[in-house]
Structure formats: structure tokens, C-alpha cells
Image (cartoon, rainbow, N blue to C red; front, side, top):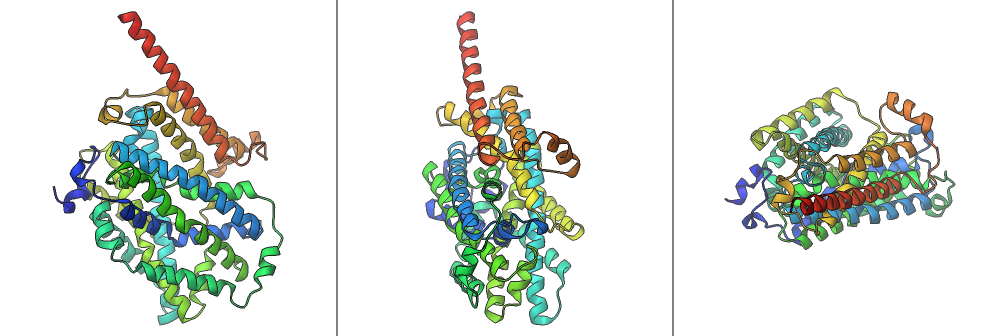
Length: 455
């Protein structure tokens, strides 16, 4: 099978001849996925006033939350990449190992929804940036046109698949232009300002909510990571490519968003892109480079959304799922106005932080290796592991209610309003991991007893 055919590779383990992505390939892929306008906008949420859905952190506290969450989040992402390279299957298929075949359907449905939501967000932010540019240069915005155009671009890139995307797009894209653009925007955000005054500006003491926000942004990639690292040459390539590649841009991009929001007196996060477009010719060129580069995030969410659906619909051609998913996301971006995605990030964290804890615990106790039987010859349901995940989810929601208004109103009655352990992510992960370990050991012991009796 040629590289050109790898986009249609479904849920079966990737054969050795198609494991062609080395550490540098993985680094380029994940560094490109980390460079995102949405990450810059998320950084702005850390310092915006609470009245504008922000956390109102001071700059030192925001940077501390960014660094701490980046370290924790990227270690988890790297471990997810390693497990994906080990098992050589997509992440949602991988979830059959800890949760059972039918048990994997619940996280699959949630991941399809998150990929759809991210795809809509990506198309909106790309169109917002492109519209701000075209309005500044040509006097015409045309947001709907840009949404349609980049919806088509995301579809074409998703048809390439991970191998084709890295080799035909990532390697050839002018990455140095993106780096130069980020360096310029850093200078622009501080030019004419008083950096020392920004540093000493007072803010709220909300380190742990800031930590959870940044961690949720990173952890939202763990349900997608194996979709790409299954093509890695080795477990080490999957680990270092994903973990280090995504880590390198994370801290400067979140920090850049926070600094721009503070120095340019941004009143709401979406206005950040408009402020950059109005910053002069060099700012326009920088925003143009980042807007074009944003298309790789749209690719990833469209591709992984389609691959996740294959866990439910393995007989449906992948290209058909890609086209349908991209079309749905494009229509969604035209009909929905999603300007504030901070609650969306927290909600994702409450689902996927404890889910990854359960996967990691199961993989470790399986001898740090999943073969094909561990993924495909499994019970329909592993209720004890699903229970560990849901307890972790419940703990996150208890400490930090997230979701639709009707849900948060119910959960808020039990909310302690201040986590005694720091945030919601780390307690949720710890409890889900511990319960999964206990459940795995008890089921292993029960199986040994049954075997002894039958013998």
C-alpha cells in the first residue's frame, strides 16, 4: 500500500510498512497544531476581567499557570502519543481496551462532539482573522465566504491523512514565516507600553482555574493523539514528537495572548484578532501567516472526527465520513455564533482528564503494552473502569461545575466553591487513576481465582 492510500486506513493496527513518521515529523506536526490563534485567544481569557468571562489574573500568576499546566499537560499528551504508537490504532478504538467495545462508544460520541465543536470554533476564528484582514486591506469582510473557503481547505487536508499532511503540507509550509510573525507580534504587543507596569498590575488570585483552563486546552488533544502517532516509527517517536512538539509553542502563545489583551486593552477575547489587524502592515502580514497556519487545526479536528466515527461505523469509507464531517462543521460555523469557548474548554477537561487517567492506568497494568487482542478481543463492557471514569468526571464537576446552564444550576448546589487540593483537573485525574488501578487489580484477582477453581 502506498503512502497516498494511508488516509483511508481504518481502525485496524497500522502495519510496520506504514509506520513512517519519525521524531522530527511528529515534532513538526504537533508544533504546527500547537501554533493556533485559538491558543492566543485562550491566553487572553486568563487576564480579561471577570465581567468579560475572563479570570482577571495578574500577568505573573497567568504565566505561572501557563507554565505549570504546559508541563503537566504535555507529559500526558506525550504518554498518549506513546500508547498510540504502541497499539497502532486510533484513540477511540484504543478506548476499547479499558472500557470494552461498547463501553468505548460513549467517549467516541463525546470526542466526535468535541471535534465538531473545535472544527466550528476553528472555522469561525479563521474566518474572523481573514475577514479582519480583508476588511483592513480591501474594505470588505466577507466572513461567510472565508468560512466556506477554509471548510473546503480543511476537507482537502483531511483527505491527505497524517502522512500526506506532514509530507506534503507541514514540511513545505514556511514555518519560519510563522516564527517571525510570532516574534513580531510579541514586539508589537509591548511596543509603546510599559512592561514593568503590566507585570505589576494587580489581578485576582485564581491560579487553579487558570491552570485548569490551560490544561483543558492541551488535554483536549489526548483523545486525538493516537490517530496520528499510530503512524510513528517507534514508541519513542510517538512520545517525543507529540509531547515536545506541542510543548514548545504552548507557553509563548498563551503568554502572547495574555500580554496582547493587557497591553492593548482588549475588552473581549474575539476583539484580539481585530486589534492585531489594525496594527499596521507588518501586523497584517503576521496575522495572515497565522490565519493560514490555523488550517492545520481544522484539518486535525475534521480528520479525527471522521476517524472516531469509524469506531462506530467501521464499514463506512473514511473519505465519506471526512466529507460529511467537514460539511457539518462548515454549516455549523455559518449558523452558530460561538464567541466564548472558555466554558467549552472546562467541560472538555471534566470529561477527558479522568478518561485519560483510566486509559493510562489500564495500559500500565497491562504491562505497558497493548497488542491487537488487548484492543479487539475485549468484553462488551468493563463497568468497573467506566465507573472509575465517571467518578472522576463527577469529582471534577463537584469541584468546578461546567456545562449547560440547567446542569450547572443542579451541580452548583453541591459545589464546595474552593478545591482543598488545587483546581479540579489534578484531583479528578488522581481519583480516576487510583480507582482504575484498584478495579484492574480486583478483576485480575477475580479472574485468577476463577481460573484456579476451574482447574
